[in-house]
Image 1 (tube, rainbow, N blue to C red):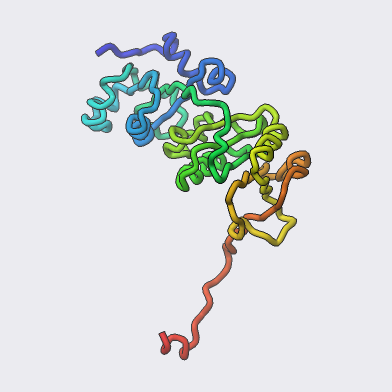
Image 2: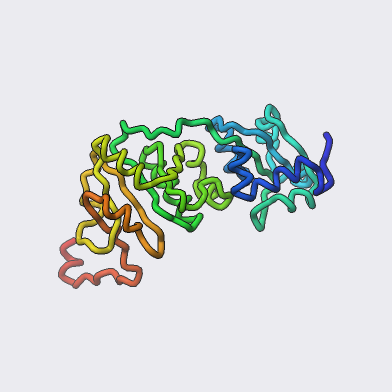
Length: 254
């Protein structure tokens, strides 16, 4: 087993560059890290380019032999601990990461779905990852991002999707207003999230709806809001709300 021991190795340099959005777009590749996420990638038959394994983690037994056997059919490279630390994105790495090729999915929107989520300027990687994970959990298969939205293939986003990134088609719109107009032509109603309404998202009929969620600080842009057919707010649970205390009579009647 050959082990890469230099941080200046050309393969390692290319992997390290994938931390930058520009290089991810240029190479059509992105990074995933952690044993659970790599297992998910294998299960979902993601287009894995290379798997990087820390030699020390193999020797100390922190990576189970079964997983090592499963990844043996892929292009695996083994690296010294100092090399792995140079490419990892997490503070407590598990000793395994992978380079994944972006799928050549159609950039065209699937208009057959009843609901499509559109993000207009979401910036926080954790928020984006949570949204991707949520729409995957309810069976949606695509999401539309404006150019001003965070990169869905940012390592922090990818980790927080918990595998949803392998199942959800991410469509980046270079002109979100034009894209929404196309949705309207295909009989979709634009539902914009807003605090300036009494209607909440749980009261909506989601047949042929495009749900637009805006920037964390500024909300939806004026141009997008102008296209909305209706608005709704996302209600927040009261964090400090105390449970109602039952009277003796109410307790006796239970």
